[in-house]
Image (cartoon, rainbow, N blue to C red; front, side, top):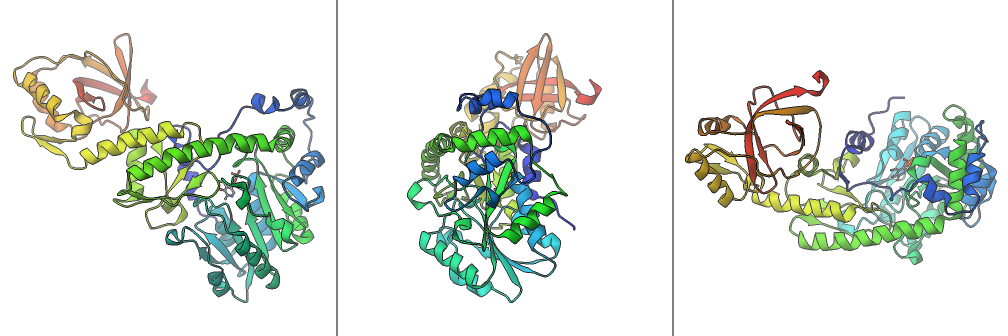
Length: 496
Ligand SMILES: Cc1ncc(COP(=O)(O)O)c(C=O)c1O
């Protein structure tokens, strides 16, 4: 099977652990093992005594029993535990689909929900949610997508990335349709139980009958992605057995400590839901204000559930916007192109505690961007600059005045700017600059944003883009002003 790269996961692999504000995470705020164990007396001791042998392939009986409480008609024998939801998606597709089968997939969607089937040789029809319909799915469209070879309908609600949740009437009808057509319904419910109003929570698909498979995980609503515990719930014996049999070729069984921790988490899941919904709702209030203030730049369909929304950028290209934002401001947004969306949407993640600070940083960035969308050409030093990066124009003029008079510029204060990659160490040779040197600044084509700290006489600078050896001078700016410019020597990290 030929699987292309998982675009979203590759994007996260590039930025997730080196970016200050992840403003597009799908999961809710995690917690430590100690905090989780504190939910239950004796849990810490149980963890200490956990036996580190192989575990039962279908998942520990105690964990499966706890998972059943999420559903109304499930028994432990209906639950098959996996290593994350990702493994369950992979195994379901391999267990139940073959070359040339046709499936209908709720779109936009988490890539593996269609890609694994595509890799097997299936035909895929997207069942498209549209922003103009508040991301709602249309059951009539589903009827038209049906073919004689259709085997399964794949849905994800609450939806990643739109936050859409179907009405109860439509969900009943969808289940009825799938049953009548003798299809399988694979219902990715990893964001279930994060509805902002519990009254709109849908029943789990698996509770409708044997046609359905519900997918769950500890990662999202419960905020425990590091456990890597996911599961399917289904009364369909064939699906269960086929998946269990394939699992022998992937992970065989699950991590014993994770199963114990997931069991504790599921027993206290209401506490996790309350905590994480609290974070989401606080963030929603912040983001509502944000979008109200930037209504000419974005459209925003407020999600009904889950930890995500899928706004649209109205000006410019979303990939370039996200790229510039992460490099200049340390804020990560996920371009909709990772979902094959070509309409300039991006994913916003609402489940993290530092979301308000991330939005503040985004606001700052937008404030600057509006100013420096067009550069100002400076006649004195003969190059273009962006006022909001290089300082207020008033300050810029003062800077020139002093330079023209030949006054040396000294560093008086080193402001923290924006930290990013750490590829180079800069050693400042001469922190005093003279007029002839100033004129040579023309040759520097880019402004540098950097964070800088001092260690004896060496200044270490983290750069947002690599400096090339021809750059003989280093111009240091804060967000609002020029601090100074310097002769530099730099060494790639590996030569240190
Ligand atoms: C809709 C959906 N399904 C499945 C998964 C996989 O979950 P996990 O990474 O916990 O296995 C994700 C993760 O983002 C998801 O958003």
